[in-house]
Length: 293
Picture (cartoon, rainbow, N blue to C red):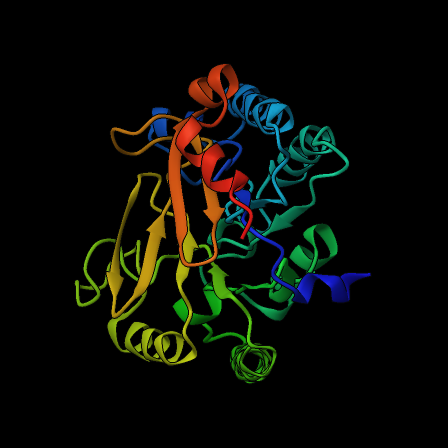
């Protein structure tokens, strides 16, 4: 019964991945990010390695969240269906006891989403925003494209805003242990007042969201999109930017983030796929999970 999940039962952990983005490695290599995504053998291997690493972990994570850009092909592009099919075939091998949580990214619904692109995403991957409880912790999945550019579907942005306010009221009523948010585009990469560019949200939009999150007592926002690890904080709200399973645009390795939720804090560490599949989690994190509180 999911009502059990309102109660804190001690520390647990989950896995965050981002941007498998089938097709980008080739597209980036040939310098054609619009049409160069006709091959994704490398991403297939990496995502298989990620799934195998997650399946081997003991104890098992509570869930495995993928923070957007599941595939590279934009809505309406040529290889999209094939990329999606290949990704689903790999993700189906995730251990049955580890739920998958999907977050929509700009490549999944377009830089300027429409009702149609969002509907198509929902048919394929599930709702573009929703909430769930795990062990007394409240999780929110948001559609960050609606904050990036909702010019073609303003009513959908408004609907998400209304829903979010309702959810934050629910969280307050239930006195949850922590609130954690997943969205594709980071609020910011390093500094809350940094300039706006492709990889973060516009400053006035960002400021409004940060204020709302701070007031609601949200502890952390986990994102992808940057294809590099980054992050910072705003008045006790931690912004965690996780590099990609797929194409790297910086100095990081293909990897996943292990996130441990304890009574008082959220502790996380990024592992390369090689490291996680060969050695698993380090003792320090396993010890945190073993503490019964």
